[in-house]
Image 1: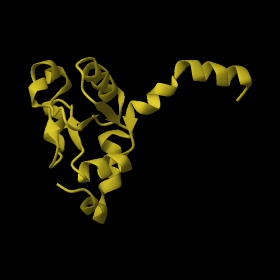
Image 2: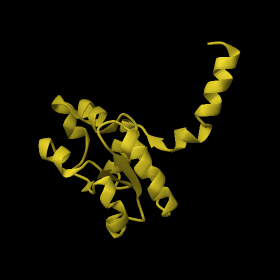
Image 3: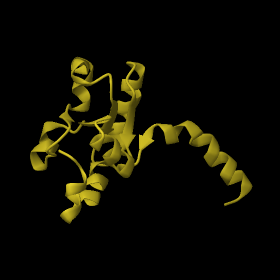
Length: 124
């Protein structure tokens, strides 16, 4: 990468973005300690295909009407299959005063991490 390209990239992705996301490993640790709540923001058609057995299921478009279901005393980790919608939901929830991050790698990354015998690493 040239110096100009590096400076350009640094201007696009602010340092603060690393504070907007949480790794799958860090989420599992925080969840197991009772410090984080997963919020699955997929629409019902998506959750009908495959579901999680933990976390809150609140489609992104319903967040404004369902804020009262979100805990104020925990880190909220919003997740969608990848990260695009969850980062938008995170931005919205931050404006409402919540401590929130999006799941880096999304739900697909989480499922990949938990496949096979590794699912027992998360407390449900």
